[in-house]
Image (cartoon, rainbow, N blue to C red):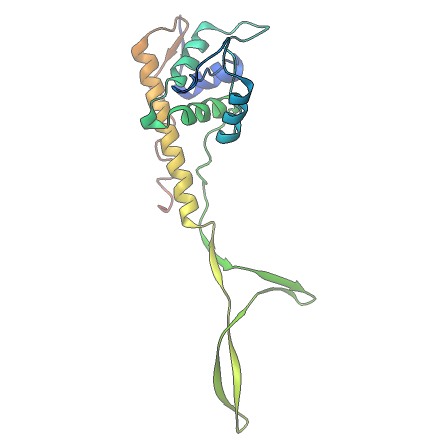
Length: 208
C-alpha cells in the first residue's frame, strides 16, 4: 500500500524527515570541474540568494528514501516561469522548516505617527511646522506656527500585497510539483494526492 500525502506533506517528508538534498544545476556559462560546484561559486550563490544552498550530489552517512530523491529532483527542475532556482530553494527551505509562507494573516494597515517622543507626561506624536498664520489674540495680532503630525501606514498596504503575492507564487510552484510527481509516476511508496494548501487563505479578510 502506498502512503497517501498531499504535496506539502510530501515535500516536508522529503526535505525535513528524509533530509533530501536539492541539487542545483550549474549555470550554462559555468564549467563544472570534478564533483559539484566550486566553493567560491557556492558561497556566491548563498550570498545572492540569501539562504542556504544544498551542495554536493550525495547525502553522506545515511540513506535517503528514493521517493524523497524523486521529489527533490522534481523541485530542482522548477521552470523559470515559476521562479526557477530561487523558487526551488524557497520551496525546499520552507518544507525543511515545516513552514508556510507568511501571508500576514489578520494584519490591517493602521495610520500611525511617523515618529513619537516620550517624556514625563507620556508618549506624544512628533509634530513639524508646516506654515504660519496671523491670529487675533487678546486684541493683538500675533504670528503662530501651524503644526502638523506626519503619519504613515504600518504595515504599508504594499507590504501585505507583496506577502500575499509571494504566497500565491509558492502555491503555484507546489501545484506544478504536484502535477509533475503525479504525471511522472516514478514513486513507489508515496502517492501524492490532490490535497493542496488554500489558494487564498485571506479571502474572508479585507483585500489588500
